[in-house]
Amino acid sequence: QQDTFKQVIAHAKEYGYIFSSSEIYDGLSAVYDYGQNGAELKKNIKDYWWKSMVQMHQNIVGLDAAILMHPTTWKASGHVDAFNDPLIDNKDSKKRYRADVLVEDYAEKLNQKAEKEIAKAKKRFGDAFNEEEFVSTNPRVLRYRKEQKEVLERLAKSLTEEDLADVKALIEELGIACPETGSKNWTDVKQFNLMFGTKLGASADSATDLYLRPETAQGIFVNFANVQKTGRMKIPFGIAQIGKAFRNEIVARQFIFRQREFEQMEMQFFVRPGEELKWFEYWKETRQNWHRSLGLGNDNYRFHDHEKMAHYANAATDIEFNFPFGFKELEGIHSRTDFDLKAHEQHSGKKLQFFDPELNKNYTPYVIETSIGLDRMFLAVFSSALQEEELEGGTTRTVLKLPAILAPYKAAILPLVKKDGLPEIAEKIVEDLQWDFNVTYDEKDAVGRRYRRQDAAGTPFCITVDHDTLEDNQVTIRHRDSMEQQRVPIAQLREIIGKAVDF
Ligand code: ATP
Image (cartoon, rainbow, N blue to C red):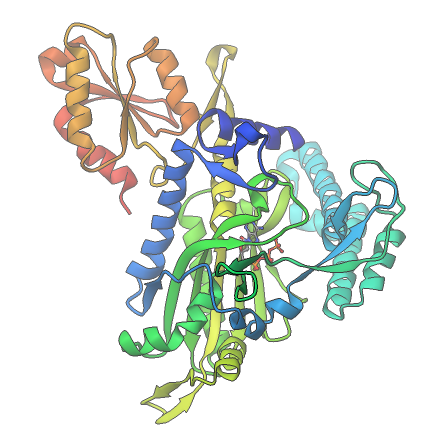
């Protein structure tokens, strides 16, 4: 697992997807830059989300609110008082950790032990293996799963009750050691606010304290009435937004999974009070379908319904993804009741209600939120796409099997040799195709090496111009995943690529 993850990070750098931020100055911890290919992949994920959420829903509209917001926003939202992470220090190593993450990692290890037992049995019994029966009868699996559940339940309970002493007790009871040094000498658990502060204005006395937004959702809530009125929106309707958010995260690891500067794709769906659970189910299913449509493997996803819930929520689930370091939250779907709009009404004194003509009355709408981290989605796509394949003859190839619709370049155009007029034809193909697709040209090295380079970069099609092209106006199109090659007329390229990448 550790090795796969290292490979993912190395590959992301080598192929221009992700660099450490300000790397020439040794980087900034938990901050990353997206390179030439990363910027494209990220943009394609955003477009795919935006199209399915905004363009395909007549009752959902977009928004692009500012990162800097009036400071009262964060009082109303609860972030000033309650946006805290429980921290624990190791007294010997002086290293700081998130107490809840230490416990979650412990629980995940139990889960991995159970998975190992299942995998072993699968191997042993072959076709005769009945997983359902095994999982419900094998004493070891049952014990690991039970302990995992108990640990997580106890953690959830102590976090909701904010009984931080109990979190510490749990860490000690489980014998959790400092991951770096193995020491078990812990301090008490403390709360730490995650918001980044900054100042508005030049002179010290007149400056106002502001925060960089820790989530994009509040920009949507404070604009509820603006959008509803000017867009003449009727309930149910949604507002969607993609934008940066900032959190001063303490556990600065796991690459782009947990960053201090990251992007969210959020949608707040406003509904009639009493209908929220119906819509909660609707969005659970709709978001699941969105993920499945990308073909990253249905087994890589699971729902995690929350027992621990924010006090204002009446239903919450996470869509978890099987990252290289195990199943972790990728997207949250929350039924937030009327908590946010009511809180902003109270703090601003402005009405944030909707007149429902069918019911002939005013009310504060309830909210279902879908919130996905763009960077986490990037990591999900990238890490599941990266594969080492054994080929005939004992060789291997590294291939990045990105969904074609998300791939940075849709096709690479390759002249077989750098002479005899082949480059000119290849360049002409580039000029024609670039109106519709992001394509690239490559003439360096033998064509086999160029294929491998494009495989590793994630390009779904290679188009090779050879000497026969001069006669028949046909080219060879090679498919990244199957490595199949096909002879097709140049005039058909647009249609073939279009079919694979259209959405
Ligand atoms: P976690 O428990 O992992 O810290 P969270 O429950 O605090 O996440 P939310 O506040 O629900 O996360 O944010 C919604 C989404 O934003 C998450 O599902 C995740 O994909 C993304 N996200 C949150 N924090 C980060 C971060 N530090 N870096 C990257 N993405 C993040």
